[in-house]
Length: 214
Image (cartoon, rainbow, N blue to C red):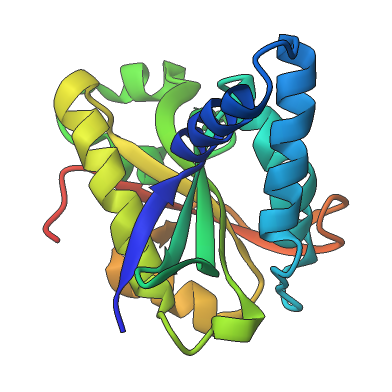
């Protein structure tokens, strides 16, 4: 059984087109409200018991962030039944603060071409952020986490070829299996684990520098 990737932006555009066909007198506010109602129904059965923050983001934040151009969300769906969500991921452009990173780690990340003084003075780097990545409990055997990651890399690579970009960043849940998966792909631990009030658990910051071999 195969899957396909659908962007939330395309979904919203389709919602709007269908709604306007039914009633072309609606205001933009009413169109958005109706579109959000359709989206809420679409994701209503999605669940992830191991990552409540991820599920909450999808159901309560993803739509508004997409409309506001604050990020992009993509769905992994059954290619034969697109309302069957296997997983999703949300991505953003992120300014990463590296002021507290050891200079040795900075050197490894930034590579050659910088003096020690220049490296010490670099406090921020632009990165691609994987803010959410999650499988639907109901269909978790249909796809592997590395397959979803591969789809994020495809999108990042298209952007990188156009405008550049040196890093992919994420905060992993404190799960040895999940962290091991990220490491197997090339991610490295950036800082010590930190407690998040948002997720009510510890997170491990990880980064993947370009260039890399896939």
